[in-house]
Length: 62
Image (cartoon, rainbow, N blue to C red; front, side, top):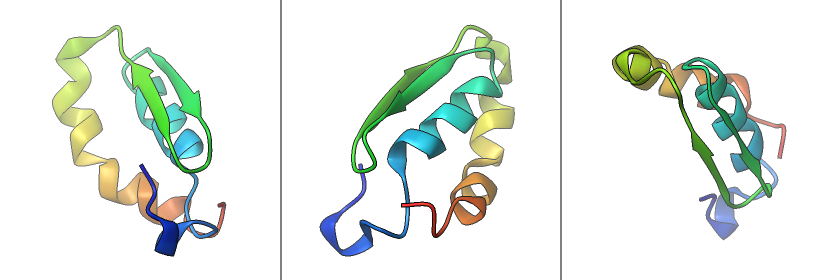
C-alpha cells in the first residue's frame, strides 16, 4: 500500500510485480494498492533481501 503522501513517487503494482517475479510468482495492482503470490517459497528470503533495492529502483514511477 502506498500512502497518500507518497502517491506519485512509488507504484505498488510495479513493486509487487517485480518482487513476485523473483520467486516465480505474479503480482500487480493499482499504483496505491497491490498484491501478489509466489511459487518458489525457498526464494522468499532472497526476495525479502531485495525489497529495499526494488523500492528504490522504482522511485518516480508512480
